[in-house]
Length: 342
Ligand SMILES: [Zn+2]
Image 1 (cartoon, rainbow, N blue to C red):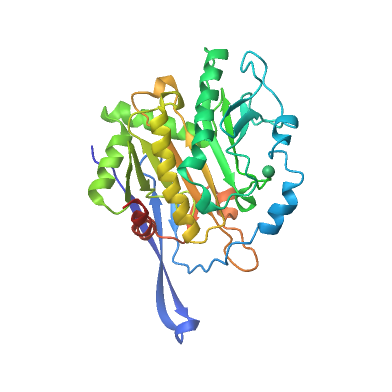
Image 2 (image 1 turned 90 degrees about the horizontal axis):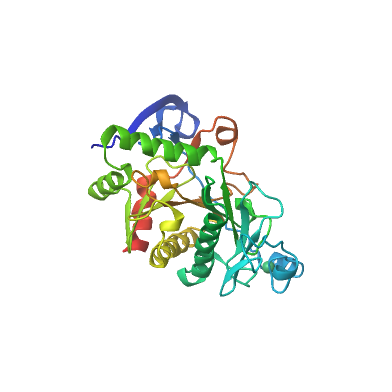
């Protein structure tokens, strides 16, 4: 089955004041995601991101009252009912997972990776991530034990730093696992099922094979997780890690969590080098019914401020048109990020 990578160039012609009014053409490329059809516009627009802010002072200040620092994390955070966790919370090593006091859904959790309040991007190593990730797996299992017959659209979500929407500096992720999916979670699973119905093969194995063959956006492999840059990114760039042998979070063996963490360490290292101040990350799990056609995947987009006056990269296009914009060419970004996977 051939996957179609559709793109259309939209060309503007104008008299350019910076080139003595010479007639100039500028191209905006409009791409469609091969699976979902979601559009992304790739702009020919030079970006000069300011250096990321130094958060050291803010980190010292906020640590004094941080609810996620020890010992407050066990004093100021809620506990589960015994049917979910007899101990009240989940944890491995320094990671602690507890109910979200201001939930997004009926199963809405928050977790810290470690006791450390301020962790810079290059310090987000696989070793750092692992206890938190395995705790998320424990929570998924406990939810299934407590509520076996209820549908749960499980996702692990992370806003790293205030620029990405975090309200607390202390790195933490959130789990949303309700009976109703989010818009994109539903789009992803339904489109994946539709592809399988039509072509009798999973989209994801085909996508990985196609990207590997093309070589333009394929980054590499950590264990049994393949990494690539999305053809039609939903952020400045969108990195995708696809697990070869798991569709649901419950199917993730500890070694597969490690494969994901090893890949993310490379991605975060690269984001740090590129001076991105933050990122959003989501791990999208399938349901039992998605096992044939879906592969569990993590998606990461860097966040940035686009100018010295603090211009947010999210504007009316994303907010009101639900259209993605980027000034970073996916193939150029892949060529750079590929080196981290070599
Ligand atoms: Zn803290």
